[in-house]
Image (cartoon, rainbow, N blue to C red):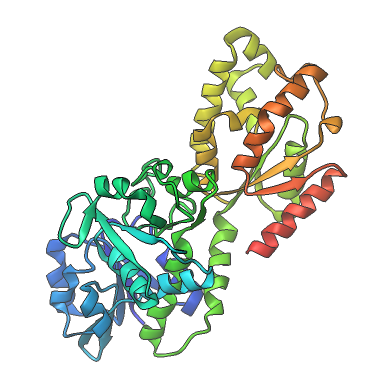
Length: 413
């Protein structure tokens, strides 16, 4: 079968891997400008295609037939060539609805706010319609049935579910957020349809404020499975969605280790690297290479502020890494931006070792004495808890902590 994806841009797309995993398809990416669409559809040289931004509405004029739900949404993301006749469908809303039901998401007495007015927004709205949930759609320009962002903030107390159906925060612009979650007082869930990075800055901001989050990867795979059913004409097992998500995460998700100095981040990371066949990046060792001297000497010569700037720059670089183990310095949590970078493609583990088992050492400039270490522990414990996804007690042999992390990774894949 000749299958592929059209849109612009497509450099971030995981679709070839997804469809390759689900049905073994040789799936192509066909980036194109809008003025190329007419010629592309005139040739009809494909068995099936998926459509992404910005063409989910534009392609409708080139179709011979359109599914009833897709017609109502005025958004098509899947087109099947039935013996020369092109029929359009929308599987985005199916993927979104499945995700909501699987994770038991509900407005819980409030409303949902859907950010954006494009095809993804329409898919989210259709899913909520089918579930009977109240919602509003939000855009920069207020319209008859769409509120503005200013009105969203004015009415913030109404909303318990926030859905980002815009491309804001998508790679490579991963520092961007569509809204400030701190301005909402009742949010219980934030869902971001962006799949790359795995955890957007919006999701990170919500997570560190105790708001539950879901990302776009699961929805992406679920809608792809529905599209493949249309392409092949065969019903597929829903379990293939979870299997595919696990497959994608296995090669992309980092293991990030945070914790106090001497809590075992380097040693545990080394064992994980051996056991899992992953590369380990030890941030302190990398920084020592760059500065050409021990960290304590750099602190004495240039001050902690200069060192933290270098540390933040390294965190920024590491956000582009995937499938690695990152052993951080103990103070990386002092800067929220650092943790946003490390969390974007990482699952963050806090190696929590009791103060009695930590060691003061002259090589560590701000934990060189027992008293300094105890002050640091009190100061940072709350930050480790705030930024970690999973706490690992590390008061026994370090190998036990590594095994616990391996078990988490195995169960989550």
